[in-house]
Image (cartoon, rainbow, N blue to C red):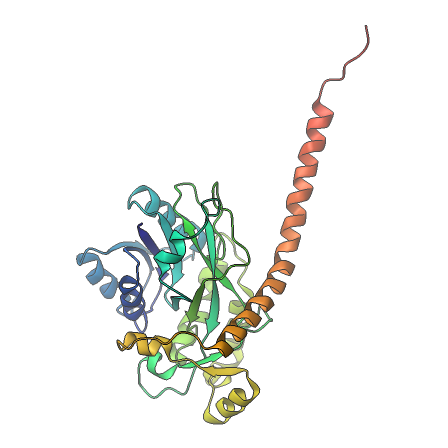
Length: 327
């Protein structure tokens, strides 16, 4: 089995080296990366991996952020040019962590009639910046938010069987095409997610909202729009609204809203991870239940529109059918 990861990056030098190292050490065979106008050293990191033979680099200088187009292109290249069996569409701030076994073992046991497997975001919060790498500072995980305007909202990403016809919608939350049926209620992979890692990174990430607005789908994701709006009024101290200080940490641990999770830190430092505790299994199940509830609400309008289009098509065919008359 060959597993290819796609990656869209822009100014991710603080995390992309660790992201690539982690996945290449854990079953990803090759990476296709699209670098969108990086100027912080990200490009040089990607070029080094390209020279080493396990990454293909595509540079995009368009002012517009065309995520769906770029990820779809990479996912198709994975199938047509790189012999992929499965494709993992990731962001630089995501680390795909199998609950049991390895990524390839999970994909091997996926029933043949299914082509899409989901992973669940597990969000890690910003801690006061003390110059250590993000993975040493950010060992506190928080419960997902039901509000889609929160950068910590409940969300999924997918792995999918390689296909030269796949379409990956914006956000990498789905993969559409023939043979890509979704297993909806199985989440064998956690995605350790580090969306806000410092004040400077926060302003770079959410300050680039104009690139979204100029793209093919000008609507901003709700969490991007919400944080971008706050940048206009709270630019000097916005990170303090997201950082969890010691007092907030103590309260959150007692309330069960925050949890200590050192898995990524330990993995990047070469330590062996312990299997999840029973309490974490229960927490994970609760987060899946929350996600499925919000997911159903989000998907219902689309399903209704699809049903309406099918009914309209049937009605058109019925009207177009020739009427038989008696002789």
